[in-house]
Length: 549
Image (cartoon, rainbow, N blue to C red; front, side, top):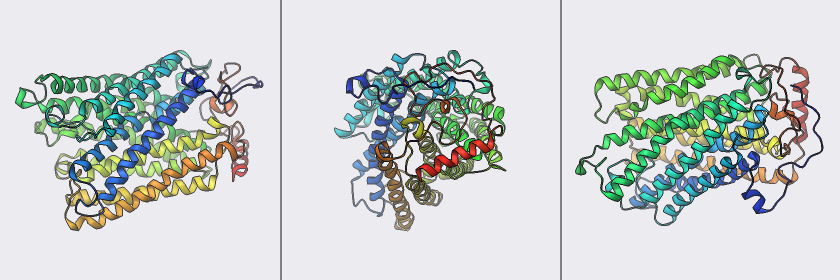
């Protein structure tokens, strides 16, 4: 990659500290940081709800909260975590910050639209938080009808309105990413020289553009039935409740890949960097990402094996659910092959990457159980499903998000972080996560339904283990907030490329100047070309590690 030397500049962090300059900014890097603050707040609101109901589940009886409050707590946890953290976290934060840098662009194609997407996100969050503060909602994050559309006397409309609004934030971001990738790549950056993170952002954006309007439509239909009495989902009004499930899961299963595909892109970047090897099977990983985006729209019916759909439909959805696991398995195989024979460094981002591979594999394998109709009938709506979902979402998406934040933190801020504390946090999260959710596989297999907070005494030990693990997990999540904040003032300067990584984002200063590059770079090498200067890049990485130990 050829690029002229960086001239003295004023970077985006030092270009003005007034609140107005941030709230009206069109710089994709600043907008990414605005998203980071908003999404972090949402994460801890959703996490607080989880803490409360895990405390309640430590005893078999309703000792802490009543049933209505418990229903509102797990609904708040699900709604906040799914729609306001997991779906936007990597695209809105890391995608916003990195996409223009990775393709050698000055900014996203539509900077004003990018800022608008953040304001739309804040508006959606405001409606949802208003509903929580004024009594909450008790429907579960899936909003199943006819209870949601007719019978619940909680704040369904304001919560659903918040989710409806935030969907447009995702659509605006996805549109911006697609146009940017198509039209603003640096000279020489052909499609098959794109970083794998960019490819997953591209595939994710396609899923968002095609799937999110369906969620908007179904929420609008719920509002029509609840507000105006239209008979759409309520059988008492001539509606069909299964229609809601088909529409909801047609969006919500692809939404799983909206959360997981960006995580896979992050892991591809981390594994190849810290293995010091060109990623194994680059073209297969690209095709697997696109394959997941396509097949994800064809498997929604495996959420409805017990809904009364025909045996033949169940067989088709079961086969397709097994098929969609193949592209994910290809990625895991390719990451493993990349690690084989590599000169692996165990810096914090790599710890998160290795944790992701292990936890995501467990989540994927247990997904095959749920894709098997006979097994799913037994464990449907039990804690087995809760454990599987969290192994994919928390063990997968959240681990990758934290790994990406640690990897690109030196680029975002220009400073390192205390490596010892970061490794301790990664270890606590891995141990706490497994202690929290692995017992739930056993609980579900033994028959404990999810969303129940009064249960037989024989399930108490496993629930106590799960709640103990949640406490470790919570401390692990709090630690990065402390040492990242500390690092902004006290950690050593990072240098432009502390990891010795490839990629255009590492060819500019840390933090990058407002315009990213003084001259648009020209790409002349293949992606992840670590073999060319292997000894040099290892030395750079080790020196960077030594500087912040």
